[in-house]
Image (cartoon, rainbow, N blue to C red):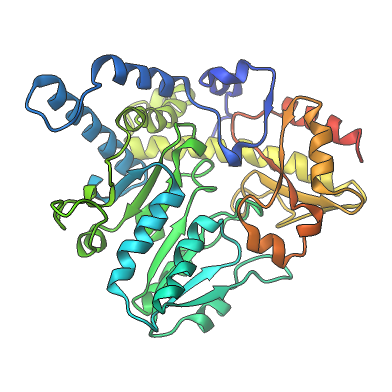
Length: 411
């Protein structure tokens, strides 16, 4: 593999010409220029209601169908009907919990973790009101990893679903989803994975992971403020939807999309897989005829290598500073973590550090990031949460040095 051409990458993001250094990407990435172009293109050419018989309406429908087909291939889903597009991962998970729980009865069990963003927790714990038993799968306090042995102990014949995060938006550690899926499916339970903090960094493959449901937020994968939920088609067909009474049970995914999806933003999502394919084409012009999936794999391999270098640089620096404790895995291997790195300082509260860095024109952040339970369980509330530096592949070593220079003025 060749080294990633960072200049090519950065040219695809118009906002990177801004003087700000963007290192709060886990909260929302910068947007591809091609996304912006496609939004304008939709408004100029296809801005009509779908389903009419006249030409523009039919053409708009065709264009949006092409997008969902491309997105299905992007995450390796078998059928575009398995993709539900909505305004946020939080909303899509809430819709899922409301719909699937109609098939359950009091005494049935759901397992959630204490490492997740609340999007994949509250929607399940709220089902206690209907008699669903909630069990908590907690991180090992020693290494802050999810212990598969503990999961097996929590599983029972009454377990209906396990909800977990692929990558914690605080720890940055990549969890063993495929291994979890095997354990969960041995008892005929279902697995629902929050992939929001994983998808910007690694290629999602829902078939390889063997998940039943998987969500990601496109506004954290270089697109507009939208989200995608994958669900196995047989499971989606079995569920009652959450749309008007005349929307049939077979009408997937529309029965899960009250008010429909946002047309112009959905149209722009085509730019995301096209961008990753373009990374391959730029770096490997001799292999431009490769299948799209191989192009994506090559692009994300380049991205992982570059991000590992960013992680290694920052983590090695933080280890040299007295008083700093990295929250999560203290290594940089691309197989183990992504470039979301959190820490605390024994003398400063986290907000004090971030507010000092703000003056350097660098965007990082502090807090719990809606992963409140892990902050509470680790005793970090009094620190006002963690300092989080969340980088992606368009960040540079030069930008990282600016952040290190800002830290040097504090520590």
